Amino acid sequence: MTDAVSSRPDALLGLGPQAPSPKQGAEARAREAAQQFETMFITQMLEQMSTGLKADPNFGGGPAEGIHRSMLNEEYAKQIARRGGIGVADAIYREMLRMQEVKP
Image: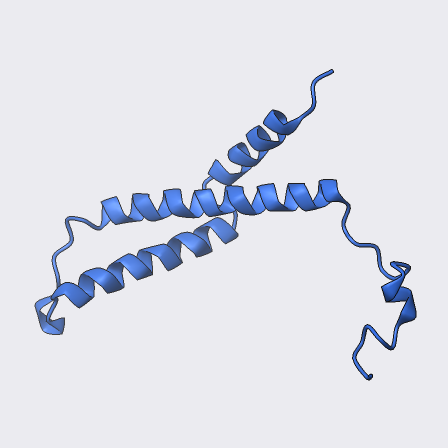
């Protein structure tokens, strides 16, 4: 056995680097969900912005151009959201955490 886990018995016992606590894991999942929601929101905005654009006759247009534009809008949205977005993810994240709090 030469894999990394078998060569580190402390990893088997949980004595190695600390795994994130359940709370940290839940917060990370909430942050990811909020960012995915913002990506979807930005994608929809970009789709609406590009609905009136005409195909360039030099490149032929056709159905493939619509598919490409949709995929391009989605990638633009992912990059915008990863770099801070428009603030929707932060608001969603805060609201998700607020709603998950246990009230006494």
